[in-house]
Amino acid sequence: MKQFDQTSGEHKNDRNKENASAMPANDEPNFHWDDGRLRVSNVAYMLPKDLGEIQRLDFQHYLLRYAFKGNYLAPIKQPQNILDVACGTGRWMYEMAQAFPQASIIGIDMVTPQSLKSNLNFPRQCMFRQGNVAQGLPFVHDSFDFVHQRLLILGLQATAWPPLLQNLIRVTRPGGWIELVESDLICRRLGPQTARLGQWVHEISVRRGIDPSYPQRLGLQMQQMGLVNVSMQKVSIPLGRWGGHMGSMMLQDMMAVIKATRSLVSAYTGISPEEYDRMTGTILKEFEQYRSYSNFYVAYGQRPTS
Image (cartoon, rainbow, N blue to C red; front, top):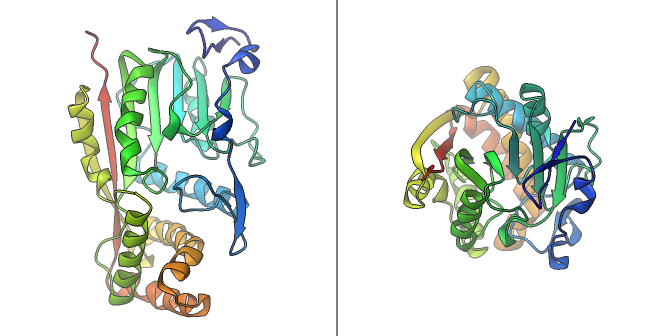
């Protein structure tokens, strides 16, 4: 199978994996251990990068595929070249390769699936690049028919969003599609303890340069940057066993996130890890009592042909 050349924009063989231009040295991740979790030090990302996070991201992928009834909403047909920005475990790429066996699919992330020791047997059409997408995308103009990006609200500072969107448009071919998936940072219909934790997470995020309201403006941002045929959909996912199978899945994902942010909240508030864990037990009950839910947003748009 021929692969997509990231440097020239032409189709060549597998040597492209070696010939692709290197990312700057300062994009290399700097790891440290915190609260028993492996994290990247030199980025805004608030969650770990370890085996536990791999498992959570894969589970979250299944949740979103179930909630959205598929892996994408953009009206793509037979894309030849696909880019997954902040590809995580590569699970989305793996399934897209099955859906579009004719396509070359490239994923870029600070930590690639190979570094995470993924157990997926990726087909030859899937390739990976290590890099910090906030520092730019190492691909030439007009390279991809479909560009996908999912759940970067906890990893991108507000100032990084406009140049990243410009880069997404730059590497998309005229007539190609861009799809962004994000969620509200704080869930809805919260009990008192859950709202307290949510306020802390909101304050920590703002202090780290993150704009929690950005997901709600994805469609508007796409239009302002010149994309056409923009569509934005909101999907509300129940949080708790009260919401049936989907609510139970969302609950498992959310509790993993709450556990992973324990050290950040403890350092910010001064509460002990033991007190945080007791609060978590109360939050679990509040999800059921108040019938909490989380909003996810899917926005897609097309690069104009002229």
